[in-house]
Amino acid sequence: MDIPEAPLQVSQPVMVKRHRLSTRLWHWLNAAVVAIMLMSGLMISNAHPRLYWGHIGANPDKAWLELPQFPGWATIPSTYSLADARLWHIAIAWIFGAAIAVYLAWSMVNGHLWRDLRPRLAELSPAHLWQDIKAHAALRFPTGEAAARYNVLQKLAYCGVLLVLLPLLVLTGMAMAPALNAAFPWLPEIFGGRQSARSIHFICATGIVLFFIVHITMVVLAGPVNEVRSMVTGWFRLPPGPAEKEAAHD
Image (cartoon, rainbow, N blue to C red; front, side, top):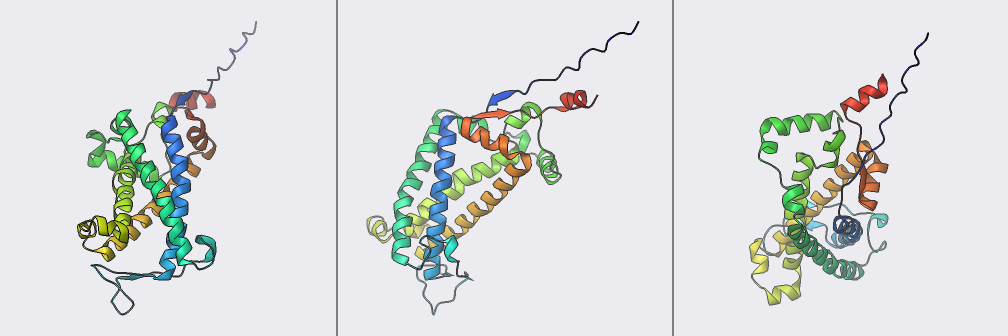
C-alpha cells in the first residue's frame, strides 16, 4: 500500500512594518526638493563654473576646480538664466531647510535616530565592517528579519547624509546669502570665507549625488518592487531565510 506523500508546506510571505509615515513623507519630499535644488544649482554653476578657497574669487584668480558647462536637460531653467535659477534655488531652499529641521527633530522625539540609525559598537568593529563590505561587494543581501533592519553600512551612510552633508548644505548656503551675511557677518567666517563656503557647498552636493547613485543601485539590486513598496506603504516583504530557501528546493 502506497503512503501518500505529505504536501509541501509553502511558507506564506511575511510582511513587516519598515518605515514610519514621517520617514516616507520626508523621503519623497526630500527627493523632489533635492532634485530641484541640484538642477537649479547646476545653472548657477554655469554662470561661473570656478571654485575658490577664501573670501574672494573672480575670473583672474586661481581656481582649485573648474567645472564643465552642464547641458540644459540637467538644469533649471533649461535655458541660461542666472536670475531664474537663483529664484528657484532660494525658494526651494526654505522648504529644504525646514524639512530637514522638522524631520531631525521628529526623529529624535520618536527615537528613530537612536533606535534605527545609531551604529552599535559591535557593528563598528573592523571585522564586522569588513564582513558587510564583502557581502555587499558579492551582492549577498540580508535575509529573514535582518533584511528589515538597517545594516551598518546603511547606518553610516544615512547618518553621514542626515547629520553631516544636509546640515552643511544648509549652513554653507546661508553663508553665501548676502542678506544673511549682513544679519550674521560671522557666518561666512565659520567656513573661512564665502568662496570657501561655496566650495564646501559643491563638495556636499557632490556627496549627495554619489549617495543617490549608490542608493538607487542598491534598491535595484535588492529588489525594486519590494523596496519601493516599503517606502510608499511602509510594509516590507521579508526575503526567505536559509531554512525557507532549503525547504523550497527539497
